Amino acid sequence: MQRLFILLICLPSLIISCKKNNTPSIALNEMIDTSAVLRYSGDFISGPYGTVTGKAEIYKNATAVEVKLAEFNSSNGPALHVFISKEVMPINFIDLGALKSTTGNQVYSVTGMPDFMDYKYISIHCVAYNHLFGSALLQ
Image (tube, rainbow, N blue to C red; front, side, top):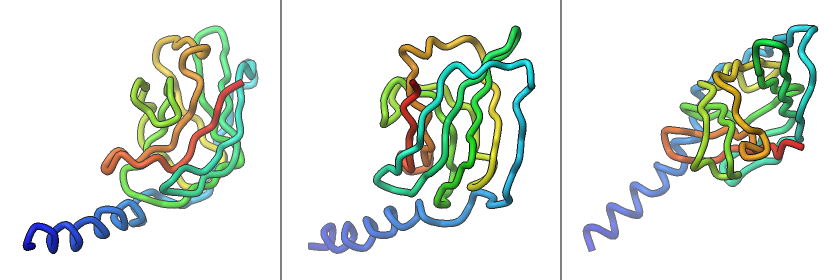
């Protein structure tokens, strides 16, 4: 009985904890190098734990690959990261780092040259609680 009581008290707090405001919400307007070429893009759809809108775009130039989150908006949460993933719910992924802001245009550098035929999702993911806030299928 005591375990059930503890579970009923702790479970809602774990679910609610990913809703805390820990990511900045300053509107960004980062730009891609003008020599870069758009290779893939996709529209964000919301996941089970958040609301995400905007576009994910993959740009490539002679020396770099970059991910741009364009016209981006996300609900807030702790430890939100940007992932390039093979699946909607990231299991096999490349972590591009912490989400810079919940709003605006932002650019992330990609190390290496992932095969975007395999890594076809950009995900906004709460790493603290393994919660998917949203994803975009790259085409």
